[in-house]
Image (tube, rainbow, N blue to C red):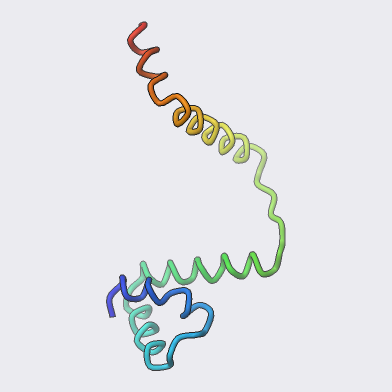
Length: 90
């Protein structure tokens, strides 16, 4: 099994809806492929967090940096040439 094949069957695998024969192939691949194992583990943890419906508060400094970075990206998307114009003025 290749990584791309695993990714196509990933949601069914995590939900337990994969045919047992394919499941064995997936598990063999996961035993040999660390990047795929990380993807599956991360997906399982994400699903677990959402199922528990727990709210996790971000650290204040991280939250501020994240908001600033997102605002900057949104500003750049809204005015894609604004940086070009200010650079030409200098």
